[in-house]
Amino acid sequence: MVIVEEDPQWLDGQNMPDLAGSSLAWALVNRSLISRQDATDAAMIARRQGVRLADVMCRIYGVSQYTVACIMAENAQAQLVNPLETPPDHSLVHRYGPATCVQNGVLPWREIGGDTVILTARPDQFARHHDSLKTLFGPIRTAITTEDQLNRCITRHFGATLVTRAEAKVPMNESCRNWNSQFALLFGILLAAILLAATLTAPRMLFAALTAWAMLTLALNTALKATAAYLGWRDSPTAEQNIVPARLPVITMLVPLYNETAITEHLLCRLRALDYPRELLDVCLVLEADDQTTRTTLGQTILPTWMRAVVVPKGTIKTKPRALNYALDFAHGSIIGVWDAEDAPAADQLHVVARHFANCGPEVVCLQGTLDYYNADTNWLTRCFTIEYAGWFRVVLPGLQKLGLVVPLGGTTLFFRRHALDALGGWDAHNVTEDADLGVRLARHGYRTALINTVTEEEANGRAWPWVKQRSRWLKGYAMTYGVHMRNPAQLWRDLGPWRFFGVQLLFLGTLSQFVLAPLLWTFWLLPFGFSHPLSALIPAWAFWAFAALFVTSELVNLAVAAVGVHKARKTWLTKWAITLQFYFPLAALAAYKGLWELVTKPFYWDKTAHGILLPKTWQSPVTPPPRPPARPASGV
Image 1: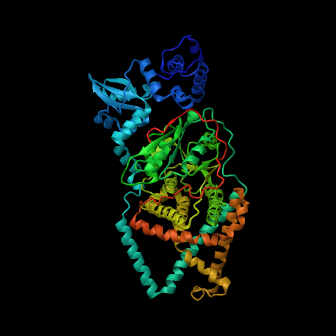
Image 2: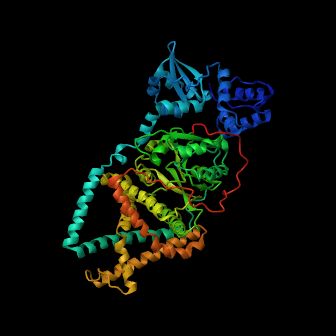
């Protein structure tokens, strides 16, 4: 079977080709399932967008997969098989590969009469796989199934194989899955013993040495932030986009969910507000098999035809990157995006992504959007969280990009060219800061990340202890990412070059040092209150006052970055709260100690942040959702 360009004239019965695309629409018209006008429109949409007519019928006009499969089987004079009722020969599937089955929409089913029967959910695209299947299995015959039945069959019988693959996609030398907790414990004990001995024998020298290191990293961080603020004050994070793609790409959005109830209704409302063509939109709600809370909630929901649930079976770990890796095999798009459960993306965000990729060179394989918060006015903690992220996403990250340094990714509003993500092995399933790690791996393999001028709003964490737990996971992941990529510093130097190698040291080691040694820097707050500083008697006066001036300068730069960030976010009412960040960041120091402890005790533990706790009282979706297309029950849930 082949894909053909449909001609609307066959709707009048003239020269109707007996092929998959046009015969499908004709059969639907004959069965009074769609009108002639709808069939004509569907054919035009499929031709214009370069997608399967069957997908247009299912996603826009609400025709069921089963109906499409019945018609295709009838037209091809092929058998219709439900592999859920009659399971496949496992040896045949393993020979081809369960993941390949899902990706290609084919399933080696049974050997009958010397032929291998191959089930296909996309008979109009089967020709592209015919030769490779014939080489592998010998004589073959085709039968028809639905994509939903094929995927559910693979999940039921080969889910463990796919999960094992998802947990080990990244090469061992670039993954943290061989993290040695016992070695980390011994190293921690040795370091603690050295610090204790130094504290007992030369406490002043230890204090001076640690403060000097903290000041060095502070100076470098301050210089970076000041440069970023200068570069980002006038410029937009993206270049002007002139090329409009002739055809928009199919985009798969992966949305991991875990123990979500309060946020689910709002999430579905926001996703329905997207203005991207539905025939090109593939939203996968990624669920854990043992998450009965979310599965029950979605099981009572009617999902749009362009949205589906992907259930991840149990494995040895339970992390967001593991779930993303598993779901990646089920994705349809050439562009893969990630949103979190609480996200509220701009309605035109996917159009911005498509345009930007059309304007970028092939080396740009990742786009990072801007994160903001819709509950900034809830309490003091959410205000500070919003100020911090305004400075990070609107000032610091654009500065890193302009300076040519590695861009550590955020965990959401990320978009990848599918081929590059596959080449890298997806996400490191064991890394609890998989986004920052992926940013480094992209750079090491010669790819580039660009920032795009589109905003996704999230729910800021507004409770102290959950905030500490969330931040401790991020800092633990930073430490683990740094440890993985510094296993072979010489190779990292060769991969990144000296400038970006220095940037990695500053972004990861420097950030960790700042949070861990923050109490030493806070001792300079003794001076305005008339207290003497313990360092003043240990170093020359000029050096001490240089340190004090550096500390004051860093605080002023932090305020400037915050001011620039909230100005660019159009939330200038938050500026007056920036001064209170002095009381906000001590929580991050506590989180750093918790994260370092977990490196030894539970390095792969994902401390889940609850969503839907502090939604605005007058919550409304970003825009009024457009009329809902035909919907179906949330299959697979």
